[in-house]
Image 1 (cartoon, one colour):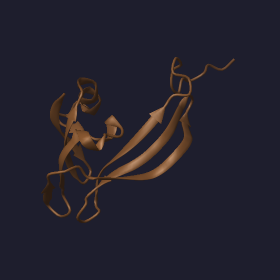
Image 2 (cartoon, rainbow, N blue to C red):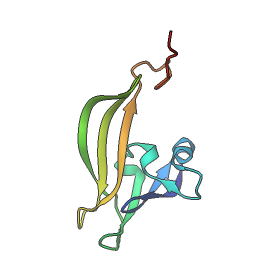
Image 3 (cartoon, rainbow, N blue to C red):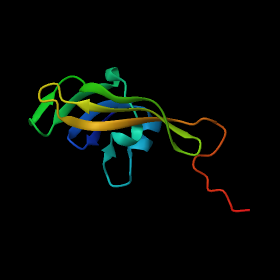
Image 4 (cartoon, rainbow, N blue to C red):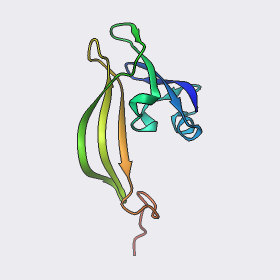
Amino acid sequence: MSEFKLQGSGGYVIAELTDEQAKKADLGVGKLFLAPIGKLESEKMLKYYCKDCETEFANPPKIQIEQQGHEEVADNLVLVERGQYTCEKCSSIIGEYRVFKKNDESGEVGQAKPLS
């Protein structure tokens, strides 16, 4: 595991990531982003910076779960949880996350089906 700076809409988080997580976070623009990773465990987040209160904190941001349940978003893809990383001081959103799950792990997601 290595430390990486992950950009969010309202700041950034410094976190320990696996190589696989780092690849997910890399959108090819020279920065890594929080959203593509999904939910990060609190113990993996080392510190964060909030753009609104212009403060860096030496601990993880708060995690607020916005929605839990099972919402089908595509064929064979279900949104399990939606949440936000928020600042402990001003409650601004540092970044957001989504957790998805396939109903059938062996199947493809959102495949277009040819007309018969």
